Length: 432
Image: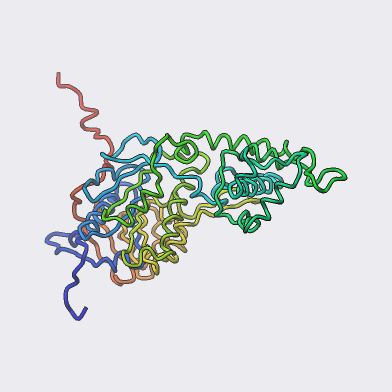
């Protein structure tokens, strides 16, 4: 920059201690190689996150905030879009309820939700998904929305497969289908491949259906789960999350917050839904949508979403969308900022991709060891002071900060709603 001061800098706070001078850091040094906000509960991670969002908004940067708890509903303004999935207990003013269409899910997402077990359920589920993709590709041949196989002729099935490029598309995990018909289609898949002495017909029902009964029960349970109503049974007239996201990306708003607080953990719903959102962002990044306008994605409570492997030994599914963003998103203009109180639950491969670490108080020795290994600029002696950081103090370490800098984060103009109840006021007794 030829010694000239940068045009854009983020004012984080001041150097910790009496009379500390202000600290401003360029966005390239904070987000250029990704960023992680680490710290134990009560250390001030939420304030730091809000401060970063505030500074990004002041420069008209694009930010997507995935709010796992709803504490950032206090971020308001004409430049902000709030949306929520399901029915959270607390909603931001003007927040829009949205639905995620099942077409945004891939085969691996459904397998992570339904968790087929044994040697029969997995292959049968995949065959049912392929058949429903064929129904979607040739709806005129299957007016009852499923491919009838038990004791039926193969003529319609072959006609649909030979039409256009269908034979290849049914095997594409991104080809959409209607999951509402999975159970009746599974029943049809449990048949012999060929009828006795008649190769032109499917065979009769087989005893494989008894092995798939528990899978059918799980599918029905997932479909009726309140945590996934935003996917499988959304209220009429809800706007699509995908449409809202694309409108934000191509519009003038600067902050897009999506609230996941009402998405429960049963059936791995929260992990799968967050992974779908991450993949939607990654798809747009690979299409170079963010080349001219970089996007910052802030993932709150990141330990709940990263490094998750779902399923059994027969069907392990890696929910790795955000890990892929950490590994390849930077070159497409998609940068990630992780906030977590459990660094030890984040894979070292992901943490090592974080060019800047904003470390609040860390009391767990395993967490400190992870930080030491992930960041070569901090040694054991430098990490020894991490348990002694005060609330709101952060040690900034990373590629561009060879010497850790201790900063007192400034108060955000719109603090998060993260405080617990006040014992002084709730336990106060009337004076006698």
